[in-house]
Image (tube, rainbow, N blue to C red; front, side):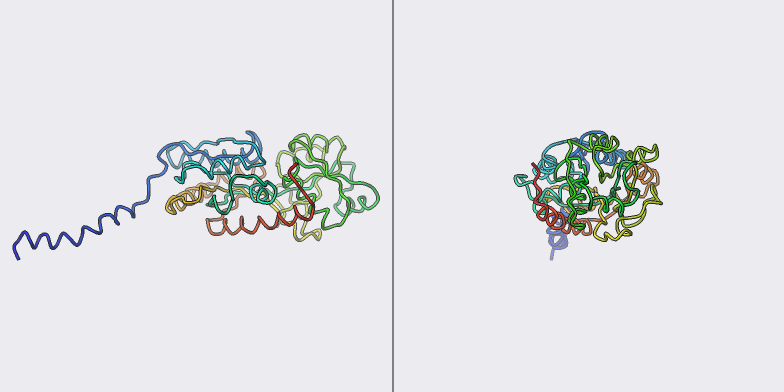
Length: 322
């Protein structure tokens, strides 16, 4: 064998490895500003929480991470936009409990959550409190006793939202004729609650607690698994005998289906890194959120379980988004 032939024999077996080696390299990310598409208006709880994360990710990635508010369709507009986006993790969805609810509530979404979107990471949750005006009973038992004697109303930020579904859950469990009063958003519902025009409201905004501190509202219970740091003296619904009321609005990120698994891992890792920062955690707590980290498999399992959970409440209550 000549010297040249021997060199070729040593080189040729390596050639098939070169394409595979190149393919093993994870794609570059991010290559331009990343958009977090949020289904809610600027200034709302979900928007504020998304901006806390976006600011930290911007610092970590050295590339802008911006919030893109796409309000409409109870969250379907935002999800459909991301589902149709390129699977490059440059456009991601702030995936919330509302999107799981919409699988049963919104009939013409233009996408299927489990088919068209991949949940990547949960990073926060916002439990709810049950608020009443100060002249209503001081306990949940007292409020339900009142409902046996006279009509009792519960407000919501709109049909089909979790503020509505939680009231419906209480109605279904107690078999009491609680009357739903929908509003166009939580703010007017809170205003009428303080004025005594409605009897109760489930709300997850930490700002509403200021009305409790000012004596304008009273808080009877929380829907968290354990008592919350913000209200350590307030019992959970489970403590009061309502064991199915471990309910939080969860928030996480999702990408279009078909996104490279390497990008999914990278996005999860960056969010997990952000959530290790005490400043990020403290800011989330200050706006009424609870830091809650779930990776892809665990988050996907949560979303899968939440869809039939809310479907059962919606079906039992004959609820529509109209």
